[in-house]
Amino acid sequence: MNCLYKPAVIAGFLFSSLIWYYIFHYFWMQILINKTEIVMFSKLLPKEEKYFDDFNDMIGVCQNMASITHELFSNTLYDPLLLLKLKPFENRGDEISFRVVKRLNKSFITPFDREDIFTLIKKLDDICDILLAAAIRLEVFNITEKVPMADGITSIIVAQIKELEIAITDLRSKDSKFNECKAVKDLESEADNLYRQGLTFIFNEEKDVLKVIKYKEILDLLENVSDKCQAVANVIISIFLKSS
Image (cartoon, rainbow, N blue to C red; front, side, top):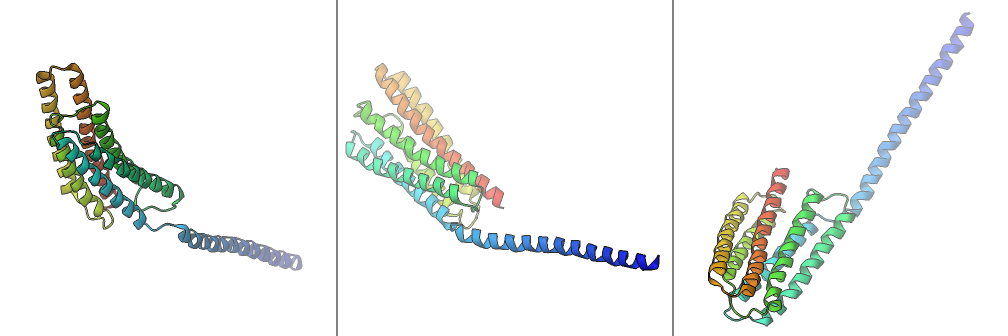
């Protein structure tokens, strides 16, 4: 019995050792494979700074368009040359937006949530689109005089974008800029007040129904731009809170 028992024990020990060897070998190979994949993936990752550069480029486009739009609505007479200056900036904004979305589709790791990146660049692009739309209305509606309160609202939009520029510049360093975002909200409230004053004026003072319709549509668009600035500030606050 003892002679039969010892070979069985030895065989069991060898079998058990073989099983553990294969288990250890399997997990060790998985570790090596994961390390190799990480090295390979890291070479494919774009530099995070590219996104921040795009944000800075986009807010610069917004700033230029806002300044031109303010000048356009501040002039006593409509200046078609100012409208011609806007379109290249709007095209530039579309290019930046497309570039960011394309990079998002290829990136494995982003500096913050890819949903926030997409939302931020999309809302900045919306600002450019709506500014151009408001300016084009002057030409389409054949408006040659000043639109009531439009100069005041566009002046506020310029101020809002300046605050956003400061906040966006600090996204790279992750320094929270809640004061700038709050300033954007306060300015949006001022724009709402001017918007209501403008509507009150055109409905009470303007006798030409067509002009009332035209003026209101332009004021609606400009007020929407101010709202979009506030929406951008909200996205920036969300990014700061998530990274803190």
